[in-house]
Image (cartoon, rainbow, N blue to C red):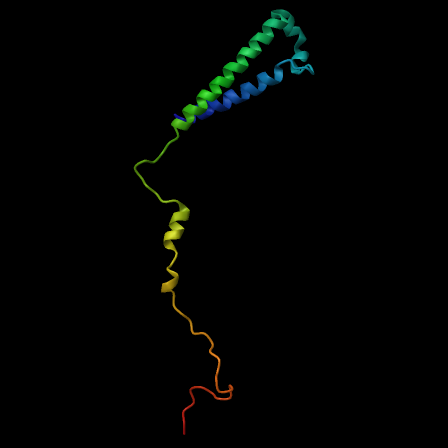
Length: 119
């Protein structure tokens, strides 16, 4: 169902783009190139048709978008954590990490060698 609605949205978008480009604007638009077709139906009827088609496609695009948002497939039976939440859970506890020995300063001047057996 979601795939069908998505395809209809794409078709409506393409048709809407084409109809808006064909409409006559202040600069003439692409409709000025089709002057011979305007003579058959009349300029006013063509403008009315293009305006009605624009509004119809705009409303259908809105309705199809709402339907698509309601028909998005969701896996309700399977609860899966997000990737970030899984990474947070898998981080080891910093207090449980092993403590490495740190170099300690010698108080006696540093000439003594540690771990030598006494004679």
